[in-house]
Amino acid sequence: MTILTLIEHEQGAIDPQTLSMLTAARGLAQEQGWPIHAVLIGADVAGLADGLGDYGVTAVHLIEQDNLDAYAPAAWAACVVEVMGAEKPTAVIGTGTERSNEVMAHIAARADLPFAANCLEIQPDEDAWFVTRVRWGGTLREEARLYGSPKLLTIAALGIEPEPEPGGAPEIISVVPDLSDDDLLVRVVSRIEPEREGISLTDAPVVVSGGRGVGSAEGFAVLEELAGLLNGAVGCSRVVTNNGWRPHAEQVGQTGARVAPELYIACGISGASQHMSGCAGAKHILAINNDPEAPILMKADTAVIGDLHEVIPAIIAEIRK
Amino acid sequence: MDILVCIKRVPVTGAKVTLTADSQAIDATYLSFAPGPHEECAIEEAVQIVKKHGGKSTALTLGPAAAVEQLRYAASLGIDDLILLETETDWPPMPTARAIVAAVQAQEKPFDALLFGNESADAGGYQVGIRVAYALGMPVVTGVKKLAFEDGKAIAHRQTPNGWEIYEVPLPAVFTIKEGINVPRYPSIPGKLKAKKKPIQRITPEMGEVGLEKVRLVVPETEASDVNILGHGAAAAPQVVELLGELGLV
Ligand SMILES: Cc1cc2nc3c(=O)[nH]c(=O)nc-3n(C[C@H](O)[C@H](O)[C@H](O)COP(=O)(O)OP(=O)(O)OC[C@H]3O[C@@H](n4cnc5c(N)ncnc54)[C@H](O)[C@@H]3O)c2cc1C
Ligand SMILES: Nc1ncnc2c1ncn2[C@@H]1O[C@H](COP(=O)(O)O)[C@@H](O)[C@H]1O
Image 1 (cartoon, rainbow over the protein chains, first blue to last red):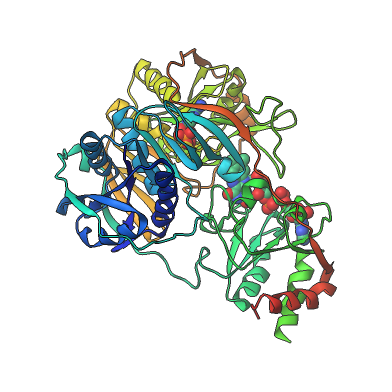
Image 2: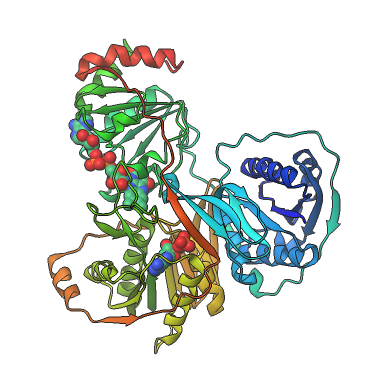
């Protein structure tokens, strides 16, 4: 009975969300008395193995090959399926990120097994495991039975604080997978560096976000000015991107970015659940809305009732004083 | 280029979500329905690909008879052919993928590209497109936010926190699309009229083994916030700046 975990890494470091997933997986493993193994895949990744001992990992299945330097989802899945064959784990667990969800779906398709994405709670049982998973981008939960063996699932790790506990270096088990050309067909062939203009939406301490109430592309000028004064970034709702007022990269919500700033200022945004799931991590939400009945008032910490085109310039003037 | 786009009918919920008495679904009594946002972009992408490269676009949905509405919506935006896989209930990912695969294989002419959403809006399983790709022996690129075709291959861009990843794959292939790849158009009146008359290919699939079985849906507890109204209109500015000060932001 082993839990096999999938380790994500980027630019020579383990993805922080993987550490959150490992923290949750360790809790589950300790409860059940099962060891945790990890699968580590890449071209130059052996150095990452030792640190995994601090997250309860006792053995690392290391797959290190030059042709795995670039991310290739099908090849990653082939590697994991190979380890599954040798190790016969009880479960294979990844992180609820785009990448792990993709690799797990590949594993599931290859092995013809069910797969539950973005689980919040996991209760092992004889046959089917009982899981609670995220649906509607966080608006709803689903309680479900997960069949198949091994169980394939990812853990929704956002919000789980990684908790290292000093542990010994794990045993290294080198694996040489049998990869076909097809497995390496879909791989990153080149990259374009991110456009770094000012502070990014996901890192900004303040997000000044606009919705339909802003009224036009030009209307965002005051939001930009306020964001600039607060060292923040501009965000927006889906109505805004659908109207072409702002680029989709600025959209907050279920099908946009997840943000967790110190302060989220929602201007002319009604507070639809699919929008709020993107800013639920904010420490403080300030709503500026001319409708005292707007649903956002049920979710905000503070609010100003009024026309944003009057309120925001007044705030800017007050800061400048 | 012959393109298939797979869309799922989902309720358009507002600020508050209520469930049906048996907790199996969202209570949609007062709600309208739409394809998921990623899938709306996949429809737009299919229409644009066919406009640029010629060929034919087909939309497919697996769902209740009422999902014809979403197929007609796709047609009103310029999709040529429509396929309904009619089911009584919401199906889990494995049977959904199997039914889509069978429907694709039953078509006279193979597709050059299959478009899916990156994840469905309601279930968020992150897998149907990938399962279909494996069953059909096609490569799959997920999370695509830019797509181009040249010389029988596709160039797909995917956005990550560390910039853009670029993939090149031979056709036929599967792509799962993310919102932001384009700005979907709105239906035109002539488009709507034309869509009404489109024939629909109807198939009734068998569900088979489920793999992941929904027990019930739950609305997560959220503490009702006690919103503090700082004031009204421009006169509230000093209170806002005071708040910014308390939060250490000015
Ligand atoms: C599957 C799915 C996924 C979705 N994903 C997202 C997502 O990622 N992000 C997202 O944002 N939405 C998403 N949506 C859409 C979401 O449901 C809402 O439709 C959208 O968030 C509403 O945008 P809004 O608040 O800007 O507009 P509205 O709901 O129209 O609200 C406008 C608000 O502005 C106020 N207002 C108007 N004029 C003024 C003024 N002059 N001054 C002050 N206030 C004013 C009004 O009182 C109102 O409260 C999704 C929907 C679905 C079905
Ligand atoms: N019932 C369905 N009918 C048609 N397409 C579907 C259905 N369910 C899922 N899909 C497609 O598969 C994608 C991924 O779904 P999921 O695996 O549930 O996240 C969706 O965005 C759709 O393109």
